[in-house]
Image 1 (cartoon, rainbow, N blue to C red):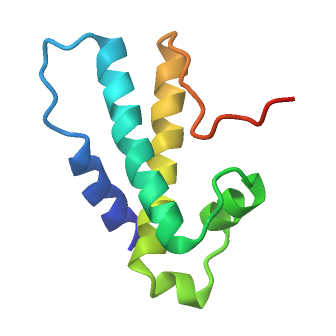
Image 2: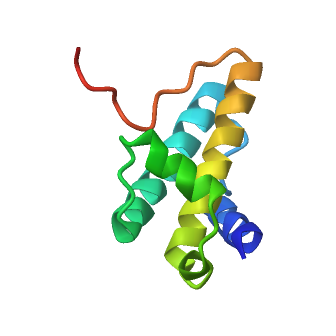
Image 3: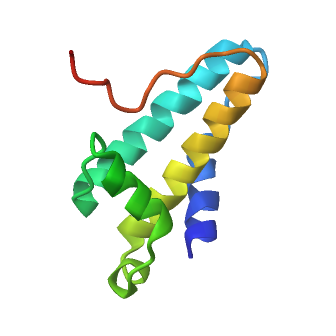
Length: 104
């Protein structure tokens, strides 16, 4: 189910002009992913500022989560973001954080 949701989420990111520079392409993809992640996190009650909640969403598959399309969608979107961040770093870009860290 998460793989199908990840594929559905990837369609959100398709259709960008080929003439767009790599940086613009990555920034737009990140913005679209972040928008969807924030939406599904709110629906699921996952606090994106709490790393433990994010890690639990990625790692733990409770029975109620399997039945929850929103939770599965959030799971897939978070995985897509991690993959996009990795790709950005490989080509020399520095992705912005999903959540702005609190001021010290």
